[in-house]
Amino acid sequence: MTRDLDGTDRDDRYVIVSSDAHAGATITGYKAFLASSWHDEFDRWAAAVVNPWHDTSDTTNWNHTDRLAAMDLEGVAGEVLFPNTLPPFFDILAHLSGVPRTRDELDRRWAGLQAHNRWLVEFCGQAPDRRRGLIQLLPNDIDAAIAEMRVAREHPVIGGVMLPAVPPNHTVEPYFHERYDPLWAACVELGFPVHQHQGTGAPDVGLDQDVARSLFFVDLELWTRLTMSHLIVGGVFERHPRLQVVWTEMPGLRWAVEDLERMTRNLGVVQSRFFGTRYNLSHTFGSATADGLSLTPIEYFRRNCLIGASMMPRHEIHLVHVLGTDRIMWGHDFPHEEGSTPYTSDALRATFADFDETECRTLLGETAAALYGFDLSVLTPLAQRIGPSVDLVHTPLTADPPSRGSAFWEPDELALALGSRRGP
Image (cartoon, rainbow, N blue to C red; front, side):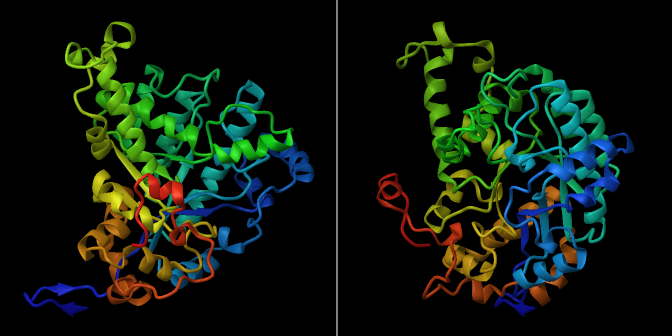
């Protein structure tokens, strides 16, 4: 603890609450959390499945002691947990798998996600001051999703819910549809922010074709982005002004600014209030919902939306001032190397060396602590032991570490042409 010139006390280390980390049980470890009626089918699935992910043998995914040691080493006091391993009856990570299309697929995957949710409660409960889990839901059955949320609300270590983006032309309605209003109302009632992670919502491009896998990845976050315009332009935030929605591990911040600008520009064409003042097609493409929007897209964002910024290159950090410093939450994406692991202190220096300390405290911990219910009075003494010092974070790097993480990416000529800045 240090004392400022005005005599007030100031912590000399940052309290890091990572908005993006990943964890999950072993494949066999999920069985104990699966309804017994599924055990025989689980055994057949587990014997045949091929684990598709490269880091799910890392014991920090599920071992309580190993995880705490890794958090301490990274200087992270608290973390929000997204999935990372293979839940029952999936053939790829849940946040890359999309929305079930058949009843059989829905029943199997819902049982698998419920097993993960129950494991998550137990794992987070081993460190209730430092972990918050996000239960996984599916949009197919609203009543089942709400019932799962009510069970989860009994456990303070659950900090929110996670929904996949709905692919275009899916049999399930997109999220602007009023069938989801009971779900959004329950999220508000229970205090659960809704989360989308990049990777879901892609249309079926036939992954049996070699190039289709590349197309899927190149467009990875494109379909998740559409959820934001559906919620804003579709009137969801107008109907549910207290709903909070978080987009996590979406590359950079520019995508949000670009999408908000697109919505604003095109609403000017379809809202009747602009008829006669500009090129306007409200008579063709207008709607009562669009006319009933009381805020602009950026105003809805600043009220209802947040970004879990775990893939935030330093040349886009200035955009937090466009979106709102209190709407951006930094994350380290543990244990993935596209985030800051294992060079978290260097990543913080690369990104925030020239940033105001008060803004850094907001971005690095305070907003996430408030949203997910972490007690900063508990985490602050811990951060004084493990957290990065204020002086270190505000000391510019002289050379980047040997990391492939997004914190150290430099803009190419296209990014520069779109207005990105070099360096912090």
